[in-house]
Image (cartoon, rainbow over all chains, first blue to last red; front, side, top):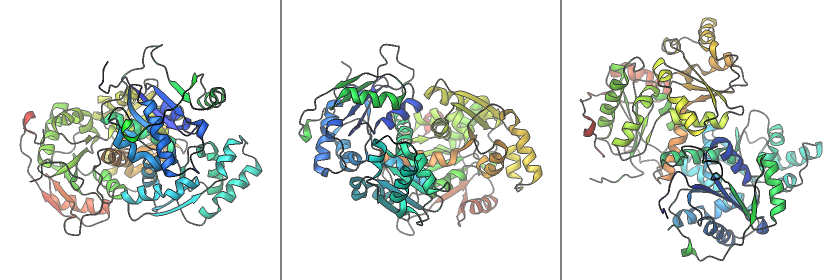
Length: 283
Length: 283
């Protein structure tokens, strides 16, 4: 067995549920030669209201599961898990680990002309102040205004279209962002890109919306390139198989995933095992 | 003397002349805590019409000069030099080396929704097909249309404003791009961002313009972050000193650089020494 990381290895992507599929979709679009192994912890979703310690433990368990596959990189495609566990996971595994917060922060710094950046996310993400810390670590003089929008994930999950009522929910959620003169708004939750049209309509076209999903796939491309780990060609048919695992009910996951990704996939249910911190393979 | 790379070290940036200052400006904007050492080979500018071998040799000489400073990363902020020498320089030094072609290609892949990407550049850059190769290495199914625009660098250097005549020159230069249904256009020359308004007017607002300068600074941020080499704070006044060197006449360089960067700088003239391939320090 080859223990060395190779460009033929897969990219592990994890999320509390189906939100991370927005990252998968962007990886398929921007890096069509790469293979993905995905784990969605649907059974224990959402992570937002859980304690940092619990989110860390859950993330470790998923990483432990994913590291059984030959991986060349890991993506924590969940804002809450990134805020809680990114540094811990980076210490635990010897492949590059990307979260969704740094790519969003960097893209906002690039996009902003006036240095005034807005961040919206779940209560957990906003309370962690992870975006604000990341933004200010790179660029201390930025003005950052953060706001939790607890009504938006339920809105997305309800599957409602761009109705008048949906517009009003988004408008109310974003009211504290208006009048702050931000020129870039980070969609700090992997659900939000799905209602980007509504958010854009409320904020106005002078505000650039930053989607973590797009930016994380872009950053993954940079990191793989500089490690010389970009897939050089598509795997021969049969060997090129994306794999999707969920801790919850696989049939519901499959339906949502196929609709978002626009392709048929196979989903397996998988049990996670309790892990102690030092138990992650690949150290 | 500390031989290890440290986050306090500077970023080396090189160009055939003043064009790479568009990258410097973006590094100052996106990474305001970083220190830059710049070399512009104004005396031997332009590199565009020179042979690959000659451009390689010149680039090696500049890298040899810059590696005397304690550097944590190198940026080849010139499309022609990137196309000719990026891989060579990556083999020669043990710090991360970024060119301007990969960042532009990756940003175009992210931006394009229809998979049809345009590239404009100097004759040397377009003839090398470096953008097309980089784009297709990552994403083989893209449609890429490349076109050399030899009239645009002289237009920028003439310092003319957005006049009717300038518009017509840009319109004529970009004529082969129109009707190709590209939705993203890579400005494959560090001069072009300075006439981005005119280019955008000719191409129409449905086409996203990709500036290598912005994207290279963004990618530098990713690479430094993943190597844990981002500057953690601004150097104390006095120690935080950007340095600019030119092989040509320093006074003219200083005037242009101060106008572009919007800040006073000190420029020194420097002689380059002939280098044999194995002579680069830091190997």
